[in-house]
Image 1 (cartoon, one colour):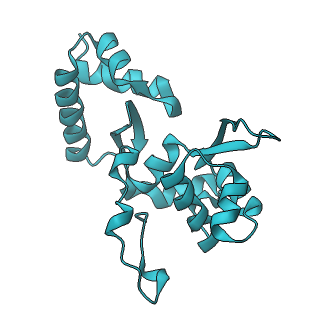
Image 2 (tube, rainbow, N blue to C red; image 1 turned 90 degrees about the vertical axis):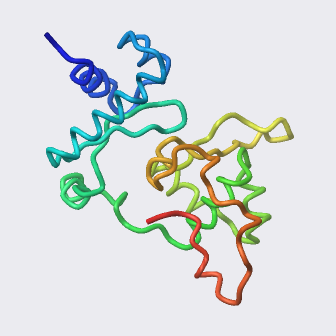
Image 3 (cartoon, one colour; image 1 turned 180 degrees about the vertical axis):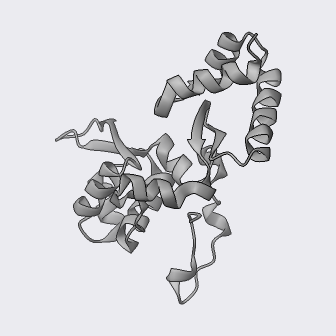
Length: 183
């Protein structure tokens, strides 16, 4: 006889990177959303107790089975991708502009920054942190860029509502001290 925890684990494993919405997961497990939240919390506690390298996270409306931060170094070594490398200052600037102003075109980003952003924007797209999501209804129909669910996962946010409020930032003489994204 399988447990709900085993079913949860199996469903999230086969869903992979795409994850499963709260409604779909609750329907498949035949539980109400409140019970699902409790089931996920208990499952995460079980994983923690056995010092697993996995955990369940919720990003927007999706549940995903992901590797825990404690094993990130060995996973980075396995993939040997540049995803683990730090983002450049210009990439972080562009990422914060997109996060707070999305959807936004590259031209609008360039106007805010005062320099061409195409190279760093291409890097952010390659890394899966931003994506093109439609076109603006103006001459030339430029692409509109938005952040991805992976952006939220990468920086440890559940939704865009978790981003710090711009009003809370103080402008000081050293802009390098402002940290929009958790490392």
